[in-house]
Amino acid sequence: MLRRSVADPTTDRSRTMSDPSNTQGTPGADEEADTASGGAPDETSTSTDDILEEETTDDDGAPLQNPSGG
Image (tube, rainbow, N blue to C red; front, side):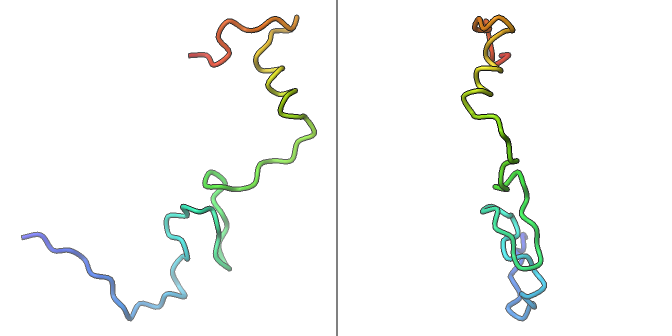
C-alpha cells in the first residue's frame, strides 16, 4: 500500500523558502535568486550585434561554416 505524504498545516512557513523550486527566480527576504533561474545578466559594454558578429564570423569577417558547432 502506498502512502502519500500530507502537508502539515502547523508547519512554520516562515522557515521555508517562498519559492522552493525557485521557478520564478524571485528570492524571498532572506534568499538569493538562482542565476540560472532568472538572475540578471552580467553588465557588458559589447552590443548583442557585435557579439553575434564576433561569434559567427572568422577573423576576416567571412561567415563560419557551422557557428553552432553542431
